[in-house]
Image (spheres, helix red, strand yellow):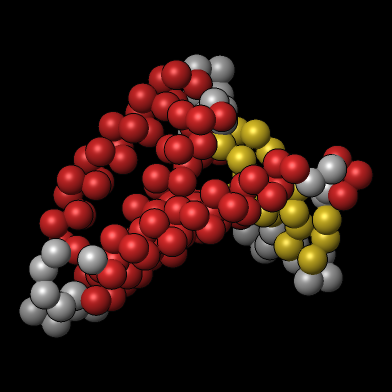
Amino acid sequence: MLFLLLIAFFFCIDFYLKNLIEVTSNEELPKSLLHGHIELRRLHNKGLAGGRLKKSPRIATLISGICLLIVSLSMLPILFKKGRYLAKLAISMILGGAFGNFFDRLGRGYVVDYISFPKAKLKAIRNYVYNLADLLIFIGSGILLLKELFAKD
């Protein structure tokens, strides 16, 4: 039950931040933080990650929904087993983020992205704009991957 609440918590924080960015005036954005390492901006992404399928938002929403359903059905049962707390935390992060972005697609017709890293060394990171949901999915996936790589059987 705790991890279902954690999914809801991550979803709500993401929803709150996206709404905050949406009501921020154009004069206040972009806003530089941490000596320019992080920049807050507003981007409406109608497609998938990196803007793929942005000209076909309905297909992007359908693909996103199918992926969310598959991931939810495969991961939710783990949340009800004993132990495996690190995996449960990672799954909560992934699902909270995935539900946040999917909710955006359904409700707004686009995903609100607002975090960029203009001074990142890797061009792949520097060229995109993210949101908390994206970061939760990325970090949660990384935790699961590392857990599986270093798991003792």
